Image (cartoon, rainbow, N blue to C red; front, side):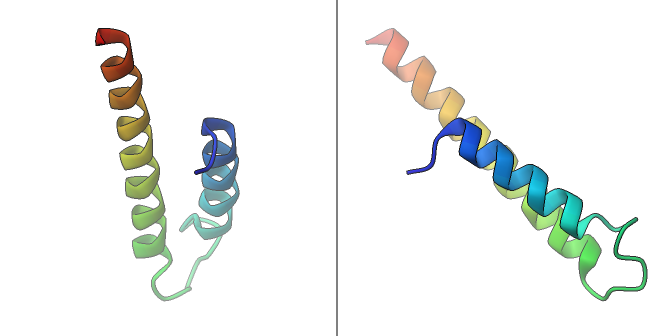
Length: 57
């Protein structure tokens, strides 16, 4: 499993690569960018939930 820093670094790299403003005219760039953002948000929510769960026990 990747660390939080590795996830963040990968997210930034991919978000910059697929940002619709940088990929003008590229088919699917907006969709790809949205998928990247959703995946990153899901991974941060899972990480936060895991930390909360560990603190409760």
